[in-house]
Length: 337
Image (cartoon, rainbow, N blue to C red):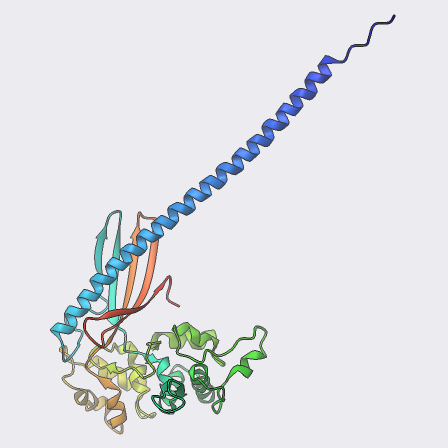
């Protein structure tokens, strides 16, 4: 009988080797993918831990800044001036592996967008927000001072009040839900106080250029009333805020001249400020004087934390000093909007 044919051992060994190589390649790919995921997870966990550490350091800087604000208010209970160089002057908090730097400035020297409305205190509509025409006129003057045409300025002021007020009735030139519902990305008005000045970008008529021109002068204090400007802490570059108080009788240049001429110790009273020659001639209105003062009741706090030369955290906060001790009422992480 013929002998059984034997297989081809060389071919079988080649196939087995190829299978082993394929398995090794697959395992290597899986191992590389696993190691990459492990590396990313480790990096994410490390970044999260560093960020939490930076935030903890920022909170410590907050506490230190509030203590300083409290000391300033107790040292100058009747008048806050720039004496002592506290405004914008950085002070540091050394940290293990890093540093936190904080700056305190007057947070009330701005146009409070939430002051474009008043809150009803009694009756069936108690708690509702209604437009404040006088503050709308001030806002329109500020917008015009930055180069925006008059009619558009009036429209933006009215639309901003409509954004905040509780009702759905459009003010003359204003905008309610119907105006925003027809856009490519429909949205509605807030019908409540603004939480951040960046909300103004969503208001009808506000372009990026207009918002950028207004950003240095506006704020969103958490109260439905206008801010009181401290004439002893206003900076010359904030002159448009003074000019907006008078019904087109004071130019920005006049207001800036008055602020530059401020005595080193500040003005003893609001009357001394408005009596200056630069502001004479129709500017000494009681309404304008009523919107200025020599006290500061809101402070802004900017904190930068650097950790390990890699992690950086920025915080912007608002401090309420309307009563002692001062308290932090809002904070925002990241770049200012």
